[in-house]
Length: 327
Ligand code: FAD
Ligand code: MG
Image 1 (tube, rainbow, N blue to C red):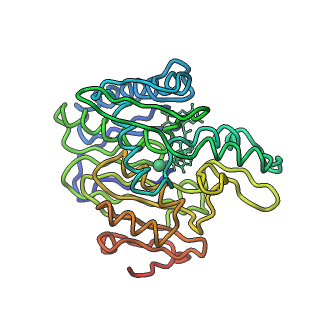
Image 2: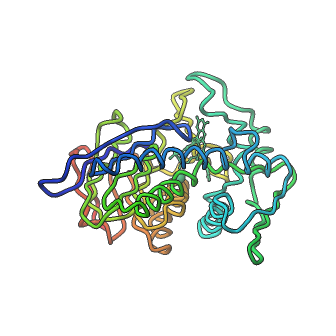
Image 3: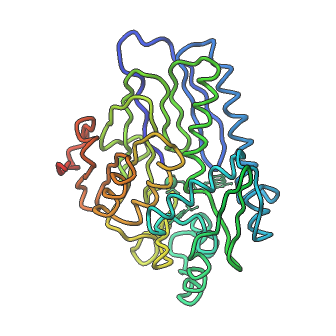
């Protein structure tokens, strides 16, 4: 989900270099603060292409497409696909299945990106059938350097809700290996900061245009990852049908939230967690974040903002239509 970026805090910040690249179905933008580091931005874009080729369901020969085809796979423990699948399994377990990478049958049935306003909804029976095929997640085990995955009959994986967060961390690692001290990485709204100084990250107004904020959060080096119902959706019968599904209903989640932002160290976990919180709703979602050692900010459909205790002091509401309810 897109969240606006503000730049590095502190006066006298050196001249930034910002480049953008289309990958993973979205725009990735990277900013470094030293012209000599600009070359490393391009290396990150190559890395994003490689990750997309490995885990995209839209690439027929990707690891995930082949896994969905075969129903099982044995992967090297150090592969990106294995690491993302292990993270997906962890968030699935911790969220009680609210985050479920096995969502592909529902995602394909609803085809949110392919429907237009006014289009009919999938039939109830088809929704229930796809929901059954999405339940149960997937079996995953690790022995030595091998990660084995097994899917249920007719099941399929879609890492759309977690792989961008993982990709942000991989880019941050690459930049730091090259000696980059400060950088801002934004992959379709999944923000990853690099460097010890403060960053002010804008959180997008979920009912505004792409450059309208409702808040700014001041952070150090971390992930700031948002999921919401405002990027991919169609409306029919006055209802908004978006791309984050509640595995319990087989329909777009109706949790009373418009967006969920997670702040924390592991990008894949934060990305999966933002999706899970959007499905679970305010109380269960914020408790889940705290239980996993992450901070979170959610916007409810009455424009009230709720957050975990550890981020309240770093959060500044910038649009008075929104009201922060203190934790
Ligand atoms: P998030 O909340 O982070 O994720 C929502 C996405 O996760 C949904 O789109 C769905 O894929 C999945 N999901 C829905 N409900 C759940 C749930 N309950 N639990 C777990 N997962 C769920 N988009 C394109 O249009 N074309 C592409 O070719 C394309 N390729 C991509 C390749 C990769 C490797 C990745 C990571 C994404 C790609 N995307 C592509 C975008 C992708 O389809 C999602 O729309 C996008 O990642 C959603 O991110 P988000 O932050 O908006 O929402
Ligand atoms: Mg996500």
